[in-house]
Image: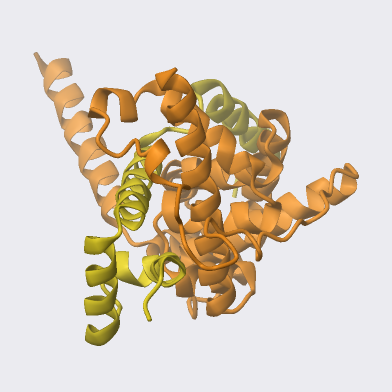
Length: 220
Length: 79
């Protein structure tokens, strides 16, 4: 009976501590780790940001093994350099920048740096500025949700994102997958806001075309 | 005159409701009269819905997470 009581008490304490930790802000967690060496605070940072760090690294490297190398490198770097974070920017933005830098550094070290093709001249209209005969034939917008959101369609869009040139891919991932603002994406990638908007615009045009081709072929 | 090209080049601001009233009116009038542009806007919106679904996709597998945990345990010295 007594043992049961203590077990329950410990569970309550542990649960309460975990709740408190998950309720803490990023900055509070950083301070707990850097000032007090609280490893559970670091664990919470890992839990909170694993998907975003790995997902962004995977988007830049396009290879699961490479992404894992970067993923590990980023969190190892954090154990040593978390105290260099200054709360002037959002912690998430800082971490994305660390991830981008680690990804590019890794690709350079592996001599996997890709040539950056520009999509600035990518647009669906003709030289007269019209879309005549280019879109309606492949209009898939009224397809049922079960088709639109099928696993195959999601795989196609994921694969198509990876066909984007690197600088467009990173912008698209931050804006349309991770839902960051133009300002945050510009800050992370150290480019201007108009450059973010321009790359996002061309990336979306490219992906809309890819999906149109896919659904058009699928109908046949 | 507002053309298909203008619909394409203003689509982001249109989706984000950032167009000035005059441009918005012209875009909607053109789109109402131009089935190609209507199809363009509709497929563009659907494309955003699909990419939005990728947000829910978990990237890190339990194996990847576990390997990181083991690595960190071996590298972090107890304080």
